[in-house]
Image (cartoon, rainbow, N blue to C red; front, top):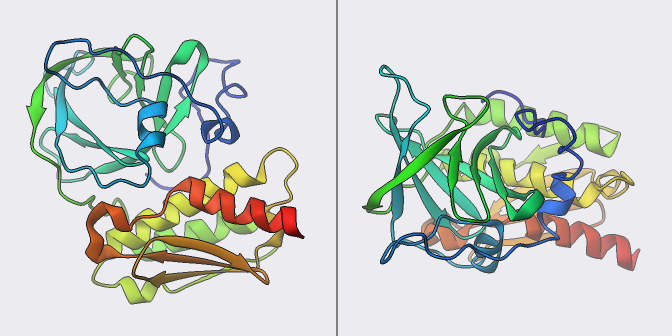
Length: 266
């Protein structure tokens, strides 16, 4: 999970441009119909976008990964939480936060913070897993499960902050500082999650023109009563509330909107 560079490296050639993260937060596709009676359909770009401000604790769906060999974890759980999807593999304590990227023909690709494709949901509601097979393998639904706990850290917070600084500075074209992560010593997963979403949001706002990120000189991560992103005088301020379950998280849209509004008024 090292690195913060957003790449859709697992996708077939020719699709990267169509699946640019800039399109991920500005386009939508209709959610597929229920594949099985009384079962919730797998999350799509449209369903997660429409629930971006909600805290959903209804639980997830377990899938059997047909691409796993005899020694690998054969199942994983997908759970929709607002504008992201959580994924936990069988036998693992780690919970990944995945972001939706709309693809051709109404498909949705789910990528980790480094831009690696983890799961694809087709317009018909079929789930394709890239966890064990880089070419993708079908994953069959195997029933509903209780809600997952908050996501675990995938690497140290210091490493996450350093990677975020490096990537935001690259996008900005100059050195950018990030402050405030030390105040989340008891909630490292929250700070790491916010840093991951920060990079994706800036990447999306930057677009092909590469101008939005150039406005950023400093990023400050704070505890707040409600999730909020604001931008003023070169400082991008991010408020999250670990005490408010998943409703206290920011989304990539929040970051992109704050930067885009600043450009429009500038």
